[in-house]
Amino acid sequence: MRSPAELTEMFRANGLKVTPQRQLIFRLMHGNEAHPTAEGLFQTASDVMPGISLRTVYQTLADLASMGELRSLDLGTGATRFDPNTDDHHHVVCERCGVIRDVYVSGSDALHVEGLDGFAVESTSILFNGVCPRCAVGGSRATTNPPTNNAQGVMS
Amino acid sequence: MRSPAELTEMFRANGLKVTPQRQLIFRLMHGNEAHPTAEGLFQTASDVMPGISLRTVYQTLADLASMGELRSLDLGTGATRFDPNTDDHHHVVCERCGVIRDVYVSGSDALHVEGLDGFAVESTSILFNGVCPRCAVGGSRATTNPPTNNAQGVMS
DNA sequence: TGCTCGTTCGCACGACGTGCAGATTGGCAG
DNA sequence: CTGCCAATCTGCACGTCGTGCGAACGAGCA
Image 1: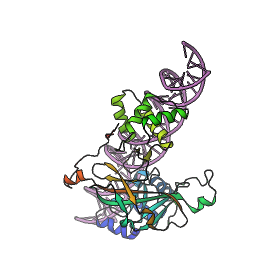
Image 2: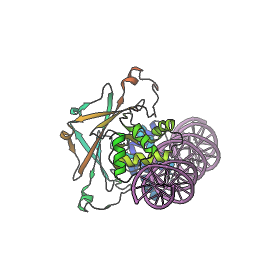
Image 3: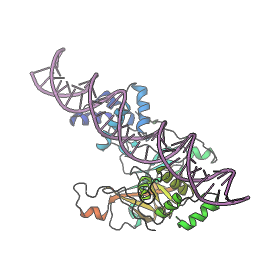
């Protein structure tokens, strides 16, 4: 995803308006590696701008996604997650706490796939499930670190 | 997934009752390669057994899944899908009509993954997106074969 | 045949998103 | 600087998917 300043120009160039709400979301998502949900981002945004509507957060995220500025992910965690990293990459999810990390996979073109009979593959998503280092040290018995829904990791 | 007869024995051996509803779902899922949703299976089941409850379909599918007799899949198509094929395999989804096919991938252990830093990976899902042969011939302009929600493909 | 506890059913509810309509406001023309 | 108009924001209703709950039912054993 581009910088808030670049997005501002780009929006205006396309006849879209740059509202304070949009600028806030630009800032909250830029460099955000937390893979927040719309709801999580809404919580964070509400701290800065009380009164902002969840509907607006959904709307702006959808706009950014359709412009290719961020990717929306369905990682099977319930809600859609948004990722400003538009590089070709994949994800690993901690099955204990739900934390998500970007991973880069090489050699996937060399996979031998059987049963495609005629399908023209256009994209491949690889999802790793496992236990993050933080949860691993806590032992493996019970619920250790409860799943987080936060939108932490705001960088800028 | 085992045969309806085997499942019947297994359920009884575990103190679970074998009801007509469950037997029907055993039969509808056995060898079913359509990756139906609960709703789709409910439609099919209703034709045979009017009055069966959607709640019961959900319940029985969840039971079978927790017994390891079938896998529940979130392929990003909206609703959870159920697959009696418990072999280690992956899926390809047609982005036009939504049809799903099992695929077998070899060589995935040889993937070079960067960025895992400390995650202990327990499972890997690979999801291919593309266009099925049936939709490919119809041209690529508009909606060709509308997505299907059926539970066809009942084998036994 | 009767009993008992697992099942079934149907409805309410919760999570996640989207459609809609009225109020608001960004951004440009004058 | 002022005013206009379309784009946007907000809040609510609605739609989908799935689960919790409690009363009625029935599978399976004594």
